[in-house]
Length: 114
Length: 111
Image 1 (spheres, each protein chain N blue to C red):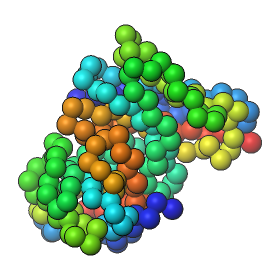
Image 2 (cartoon, one colour; image 1 turned 60 degrees about the horizontal axis):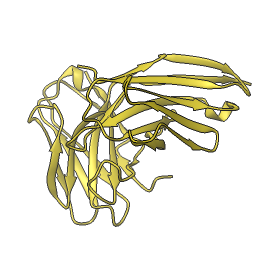
Image 3 (cartoon, each protein chain N blue to C red; image 1 turned 30 degrees about the vertical axis):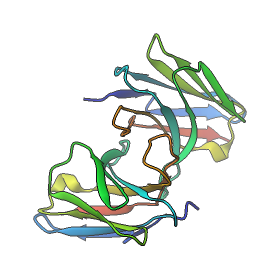
């Protein structure tokens, strides 16, 4: 086990709603990254937070936002859900902010948008 | 735009055989190439990684071969075992330290 947990495991929402996904990182890991993994695809980088500040963002619209808290927990918020947002959402924690720092992934939250 | 192209999409190998997964990239600014293994219901886990100044890296039964001039790299799994059955992703990191994943290869090892 990686020590990274995510909640909830599964979630069903309807188009236009808002959703909050949660992640608990390993203690001492100052960096958390969020990824979207569509069915049959590789994970796509959404954004990264380092010491509670956004530290990089992928090609995702502003309705995807995040927060990182001092207790090594973090959130991914998605507003105005669209059908294409249906995917597995992964968070990954690492001790530092470089890509060469090993990222430890959680099991993901499966989001279905109807 | 797919920056890391991975093949094959799926692969079936006999137990004890060699599994080979290939990846190609376009961006010469990529400077770190990890491979991830993902089991059903789990997140990806780092398997092995290489920098472009090295042509080969071996860890146990897993070997990365890297061809900088061809902008290609591959994962070789020697003596493949049923427990190796999983989805494998190659990846590359860009100047901004973002990890860009390939689409994945679903590997099945026949017992």
